Image (cartoon, rainbow, N blue to C red; front, side):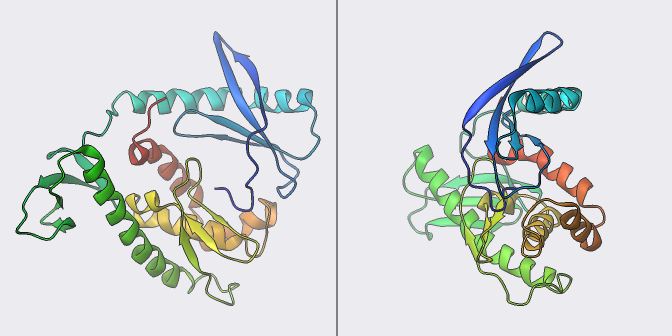
Amino acid sequence: MGSRMNTLPERKLSIAYGDEVIDFELLESPSRTQKILIKVYADCRVVVSTPLNTDDKTIIEAVKQRSRWIYKQLREFREQSKFITPRQYKSGESHFYLGKQYQLKVLHDDAKPKGVKLLRGRLQVNTLDTNIESIQSHLNEWYRSRAKIIFEARLQHILEQALWVEDQPNIRLMTMRTQWGNCSPSGVLTLNPHLVKAPTICIDYVILHELCHLVEHNHSERFYQLLTQVMPDWEIVKERLDHMAVKFFNQTC
């Protein structure tokens, strides 16, 4: 998650683990907890968030202490990426929606409305333009439209549990490379439309995570206590989402 952290990576460091060199990007974030946080993304980027003015020796030591875990995450993502092939946007291809896989069917029928329909277990795209970009554009537009509807519905459901939220937050969509969502200081929830490809429980987790930031801006102990109170198994859900990300983004390491 990237709530309230928009700082871009400033520089890189590396450590050795066995015969491998692990490079990682550094983020200095004044709004985070005073802990050093390490995240491994589905595209095999390792990002380390640190308090301001943390010296390199302290950072490297913290990363070394988690090196076995980092290496395991990288290995798992690389294994997953072996089975990921670039999208061709052709009939028969598999695409995700709400955690399920649907077969793509591409039509070129000028007698039918152009666009995407979820029909009889298939994602049916009708377009007169046969190039990949056109089919991809139709699908992306459909995902965004579905994401807006699904996210609004899930937010309504979650607000029944999130009793600390006084006013219903606005939702905006933004495609992000490394974040599922974030929460602005004014309380606007920004969610990645790719998230609509994930199971509903994963969508709920991301929304709850961001709503918790309305109370606690940092990833503090209080933040995680609140998150655990409303979703006791959030760590399992988060791990499930993280490991599916490579499929949703169709990324390779």
